[in-house]
Image (cartoon, rainbow, N blue to C red):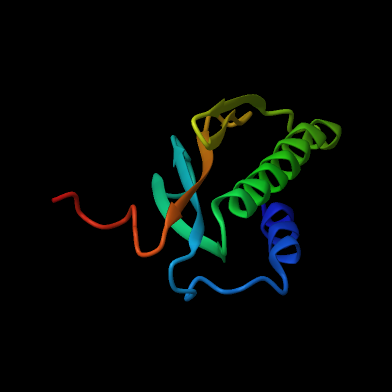
Length: 122
């Protein structure tokens, strides 16, 4: 998982930070359940702001493809998670079942600034 984070950080290097006004923000939604060594996790994290929806969607495709590739590569390390890839309505989701029984999802979506999926629903 650290390799994924490091690779994503390198991918986003030099891109405008999330503070851009009237931008499209790439959000990552992570959920992990059934972990024996830590509590369940459900987090939304803003990644990068882009000037247009199309550019944000291109970034999602790149991040999604890289993450899926890295999960599939982990089989060579003997961990071999079961990975399902789902593409739907401008979002991409990877659902993973790890060998220890942990189930995780990672989803990326583009939302206009200042929309924040962490905010309580009105």
